[in-house]
Each structure stands twice: as C-alpha cells, then as structure tokens.
Image (cartoon, rainbow, N blue to C red; front, side, top):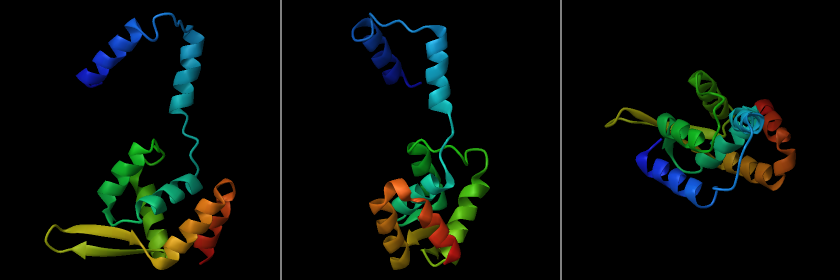
Length: 136
C-alpha cells in the first residue's frame, strides 16, 4: 500500500474508526466478499464496450478494466483478447495498427455503439446483449 494510503488509514483508525471493532469472522466475510469474482461475461462485455467508446490499446483496456475491479481475466488475458476478437468478428469493434508505435488500437463501431446503448438502457436485463452479439 502506498505511504499516503497508509497514513490515511492510520488517521482514520485514530479518528473515524477508533470505536469500531470487527471480529475475525466479520473480517473474513468482508475479505471474501471483496475478493469474490462474481462478474459475469456480460458484465465484462458491457465494461469493454463502455471503455472502447474511445480508442484504446489492449493494454490500456486491460488496465481500465482492472480499475473497475474486474479480475476475471487477471491470470488469463487470453479471455479478454478472445472477447475483443469476438466483438471484431461481429462488426461491433474495429481495430487498426499504429505503425509508429506498433500498437493495435480498438474502438466501437456504430453497430457496437447501438448495442451498447440498448444494453445500458436495459442494464438489469443485459444478458440479451451478449446473445445478440454472438448471433450477429
């Protein structure tokens, strides 16, 4: 943990949290809940599409997804690139190589933006978006 975060934690322990006590069982439940990887493929798909409304490299995309707390592909980045290629094959995503940097950039197409808009409007029922993408 960074020093500034450690100092913040110490300060909060002395002031805000000084009267709070957690049992070992309660700490374990909280830790388990934080580390629970219950994100679905649909959650990841939605996050990828939201991020790729602007042009990003695969590395930038992975970093931004991690920033959202999605860890499903942490030890398996192939999962993320499989998803990217599937979006490309369905016409929802386009890619281009930057010859100077050698990086490949990804961005949603108009079709991808339309599907994203539909998925965001029906967020609780977003499972249809993946089905629509896969069936083209």
